[in-house]
Amino acid sequence: MHLRGNPLAQEVIMPTFYDPGADAGEASEALRGLAHASRTFEHPRDLYGVLGDVLYGVRSLRQVLDQLARAHVENRPRAFDDHGGHEVGSKAALDAADELHQAATLIDQVEDRLDKAHAASGRVAWRDEPAVEQVTVKRWVSICFLQGEEADEVLELIDDEGVDAAMSFLKNWDYGDETTDAALENGYVYDLPPTGPLEQEVRDGDYDMTYSHSFGHVGLYRLHEIPPEDAVDKQAELAQSGPTNWFEHPGIAAVKRERGLGL
Image (tube, rainbow, N blue to C red; front, side, top):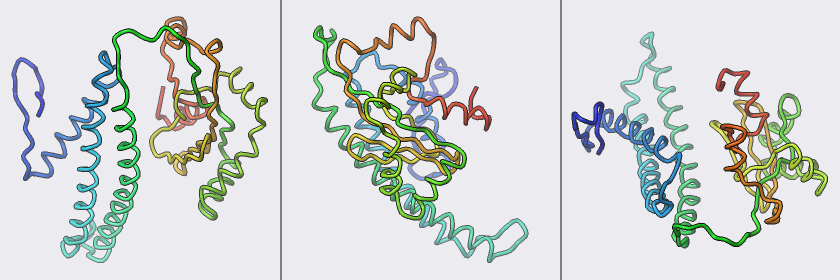
């Protein structure tokens, strides 16, 4: 339930529970609102509840994808292409159902991760005042970010031999302290491994690999412990340098600019 348009109009929008088109539109608007509202959390204690609602939403999304897939299959007798060809339309409906089924399978992985995140968040006791003592922090450092022919080689390896083989191959770029020092010096350090739309992510212990066949790039990151005395106050840096996307690798930003996906 939410208010549409002018807040003064107080037009309350409710789910219909019978009109898929209308409810899909309302769900899209609600998620867009959540994406905007969750940019900051004034009260961290709200995180657990929001995460729980997102988890329940993902479970419902899994069901929606299955039902969309089934509807494409069941309605194949009414499927045609723009030229009236039933065979082509029927095949396209079956292709859509297959992709929806694959998407639903991926949602299972998302749900499992969210469930674990929700449980971990429930163990946090948030306080109004931050801790005084300094603690060791962990950040992800960039091992390598490949584009072009180098990335194509790894993407082909993923297709032929799987993600484990590709990750083992990329680990050859990790030279330990030398790689870490280079990442720290160049600012390739992240709270979370940088990912974006149409990217896949694979975690193996302290390593995280992200890749995209659509954008043609592959990245490998390693978890690194930073002593308290070396930790950077990012809020202070933001105040001095202006807005920065701390989660995006410069290589990804360049790809987006080339493809017209960013400023």
